[in-house]
Length: 234
View 1: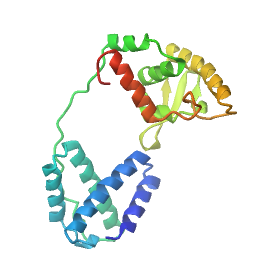
View 2: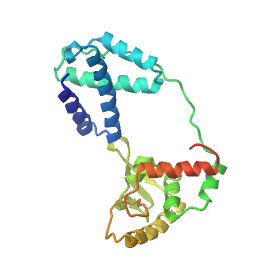
View 3: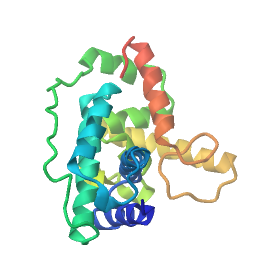
View 4: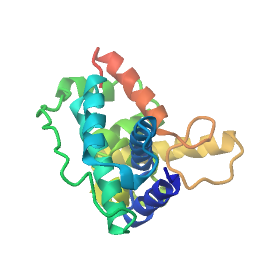
């Protein structure tokens, strides 16, 4: 199997569609898993892949008890890849064109109560933690948007944030007085972090105590600890 096609496709969706690195990694895993399945069946060319192999692969996913959302994502990965192969005339027929998607069950979102949110906001939070809560709760930022914020993305006086969401799409998000106060207080604490760690400058907004950029995992760990305060998985 010519893996060069896969590399070119991943580069294409990254550049042309502006997908995030996490989405690219998910596509890579899904497609590599399918190609490994085909290789185990003695199929070594994309032109040899037929719809029945795809159906067998999807049945195997169900046998391995993958949930519906994972199966839907993997099918979407196959559809996108084989559509690209067909459009570039690397294959003459697209075996993924007529694959049926399983229906996803509708799920109501789990939400926190106002009292639970107040418990977290009014707990003993340092300036960094208080800012994380305000930007996630008051502004509704995604965690990835939060950790990628730069100093120049925030206008404290005008009270808005410029952030980049899925597919690098720009969003302008307003914030209120509480978030404004949290940002102002945090920036003073941030200056001390830079001074303590002998760092001259950093464009990144959220920093650890060590002066390094805060990651999504840092925020997830913090959120999990807040959930312990209200005995709930957030």
